[in-house]
Image (tube, rainbow, N blue to C red):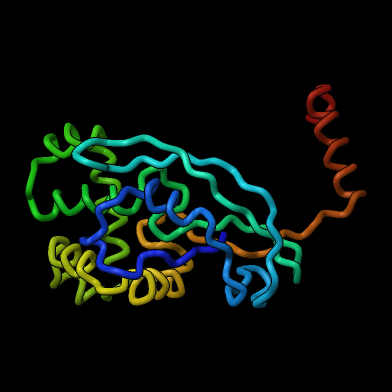
Length: 217
């Protein structure tokens, strides 16, 4: 996966949903200077198809459900393929970054009760607390244990959405430090999987066949 920087302003000033932002930028091409996560080279990229993914956002006072097309590219240096994910999309999460930050902002700044937040955004309390947990974990990683304990979630949210250039001053730096995007649960791995020899797969297949035949004790 390649993270594409797109939030070059204060998040608090963004009035569009992730789907609207993506529709505006769908003709942008991958920059040649971007580094392949696997081989580490700055190389030429070949188009390698696309796929659709769901995205849930909040727009004009209502929850909106949409789909966006994610481009895939192939590194000409090592042959690996990567999805191009803009940084207002949280990898492996249906809800957009702006949606989750809006929910957390209302939670930490106590604008609504958890029940009120769930009713407004059509989510469950477990989702609120799950996002709260990963937010606090990432806040601690970014600030350090001591500083994180001294800064409230509300204060960190205010700083985050008021940062003049989210992508370059926070998003990119956080990814380099942790190998995952802010609010992303799973760490990115760019290791090349080793192929098992064909003879080894033959033994595996034979073991499976014997197992289902009741031969393997």
